[in-house]
Structures are given as C-alpha cells and as structure tokens.
Length: 270
Length: 239
Image (tube, each protein chain N blue to C red):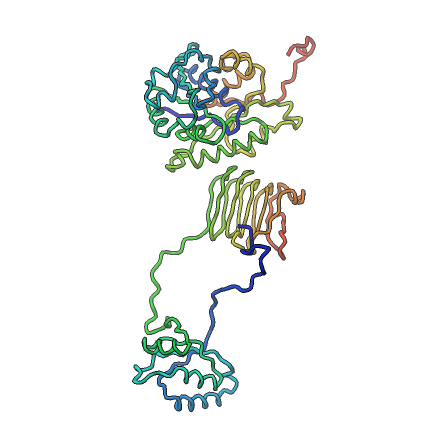
C-alpha cells in the first residue's frame, strides 16, 4: 500500500518545494517508485526546481477535470528512475482543487506508486488543506525563526484535527520535523533559535537539519534537486534525511559549528 | 466571556436581579372552613406559643379539605390569619374549585408537595458523566479548547496562539505558552495550574493579566494561579 506524505509548513519561503523535490528524488534514487505532486495551483514552482518546466503539457487540474488522463499529465524525471512529477496548473487557482478530485487522483496514483509526495502551498487555506487532508505522514518544514515555528505549530494543530485520519479517528498522521536553513554559528550567537529551542516548542521527532547553504539557491536556479549535489552540505543532509525516513539510524550532522582544520585555515580554504 | 456584568457601563447600575431560592415555610393544613372554629383553635395555639406567630408566612394546604358545598371565602380566611400573626403566601393542593377561589383572593397556587402520598421514586438515571474534559495531546497554535461546566486537563503543552478555556479549573501538565482562561462563567474560586508558566495571558473569572505584567521570577516555573480579593496571585508550585 502506498504512503501519502505531505510536505507542509504554514509559512512561505521556508523550503517546502526544495524539500519536496529532494525528498522525492532521494526516495526514487533508493529504488522506490515515487511521484511528487505540486499542490500550489496558480504559483507553479516544483517543475522549475525539478528542471522539467519545458515538458509540462497537462497538469493536476486537467486531470481533476477529466481533460487529460493521469498518464498524459505525469512527467517522468530524466535523471532518476522511478520518479514522476505531477505539475500544478499555473492559470487556475486553488478553488479548482476539489476533495473528490484530489481523492480520485491520489487513489489512482497509489495503485502504481509506493510513495506519493504532496508539495503543499503556504498558508492554511484550501490548497494547503487539500494537500494535507489525505496524508499518512507529514514533513513539517520549519526555519529556526519564531514566526516560522509558530506557523508550523498551527499546521500541526490542523494535521491533528482536520486531516482525514483525524476526522475518521484513524491513527494520527505521523509527523516529522525538517529544520531547514540552519546556521549553527548564528544559533550559538542567539541570532537564531537552536535545534533544542525548536524541538521544545514543536515537540515532534526531528527527521533532519538542513544547513543554510549556497548550494540550495544554485541548485534551484539550475533546476536540479539539491540532493543530487552530493558534495554539498545541504545535499548530504537531504540524503541523510531520506535514509532516516526509511528507517536508518543516523546521527544529525550540521547542527554544530564546523571547525576549520589547521591546513584549511592555513591555506584559506573553506 | 470576560465581562462580569451584562449591562453596558454607560447605563444605570443594575436595579434588581431575579434569582431562584429555597425557603422553609410553615404549612397550615386546613380541614374545614368554619372561621369560628378555626379562630378558636388559633387563639389556643397562640396562647401556647406567644410570639411564634409573628408575621409568619404560611402556606395553606387544602389536601384534607372536602369538596366545598358553598363558595369558599379565602378573603375572610386571609384576614383571619393576618389577625393572628400569620401571612398566607399561597395555597397548595385542593380541587380546581379551591384553586380558582384562591387565585381570586390573590393567593398563588404552589406546586404540589413531593411527599404527597408515596414519594415519587427518583427515575433511574445513568451516573452523571463528569463534566471535566481531558486533552491527551498538546494544544497547538490556533486551536481553542473549551470545557463547559467543568475542569480542563491538558496532558501536553499549550502552544503560543492557542486558547484553553474552562468554566472550572485548568490543569496543564506541560508548558503553558498560550492563553488560559478559568472560571469564564464567573466562578472566582477556580485555579490554573501549569508545569511551566510562559503564558501570553491568564484569566480567572474575568480578572486577567498579560505576560508583560508577570514577575520575571515566575517565568518558566511550575505555577498555581488563583484569585484573592479580586487580585490574581501567582505562586510557584513546589513539590
């Protein structure tokens, strides 16, 4: 049985789409048939991050409205096997998302995929609610900053009260915390919340800490999920995150200040 | 929910208030209506206990009275009783004819006695469910939990931006970072307990305080909060 995972946050710009792209890519790299769906109808971004924007013909809303079949709308990733993207519509808005339509597509996708990753739009309105409603698990993306943590707390409340699992008193949605854009030196100086601060407020298991990294911006602009940039710190952190999700017990990296070695300091590398 | 008096400040102060209450009243069980006989017996009673009938309110119970042959003179009865220091405040039981006559004389008809004949068996009911509400998880930002007519018990934390509200007490076995309002129906005897006081606002029976007004020494401590002479008191919870 396929697992539906929503990547959500409440607040915008914290790294939901970056996380969705890398997470789905990582699952597919490890051999799982994975599809990632862009729920941000009207503000289509996932196709850009995944580098498939020029191959979008039909989209999520076309399939909901029976204007195209799922197979016509799904885009196969060229770099990683087992990975498909279902893009959002850029010309419509979130009202085009109906519960029945989303349910129909998800149940169809669950026939042929092992993981269905839903990239939620920001906010707590229709788009975000539709993205999380059918979820079995949730990656809650947060930045080490008070407003982002507050909004994630709000989303956790909605997950536990307004998801289908909550409404049907089923087992609750399994929650995972992804702390993105973390800079240990700034957290130590008190400019940012520390990992412990965030965990104390949100009180859900930590799946991964993604360091603030120039590699994320470079990858986004190049249309390559950052997890494929394995030499970068952010790429390595996403790799660990996927392994942890699949059950590996790995220590958290990138939560402490990286001390520059003697030689690095001497030669000014870094 | 916070307002204590329902009227606006610019109106007159409240002129009265209606409330139900229970009283113990003397009941005069009347068996006949011969005023001369009644008066004779009354005088005897007053002689036995002078001062007892000193403007004593009484209820006239007509259960033992036969169906009246002629018209009932409640007005005359009323004056007779007043003369001997009793103030009839109403009648009980009696036939519809009795009751109509009493109403004409300005005496209200009170509901029948419960102990009338066989005491009515109390209806078998399920044990009354406790009005308390237990929340077994954390209350997240944006959620509002209300426990009407009882206590609210939260086993997790209450996040910033969440409201926990109860007519009774509030117990929080985690950190209180949101708002907690106890005794919202006006019960000033309610308390708030929490494992770590980091609240945005606390309120008991409408007396509230925002976090800016907390003593910094109380912050992030286990605390109990109650009202004393209309002031919120915050005390550390010590084990």
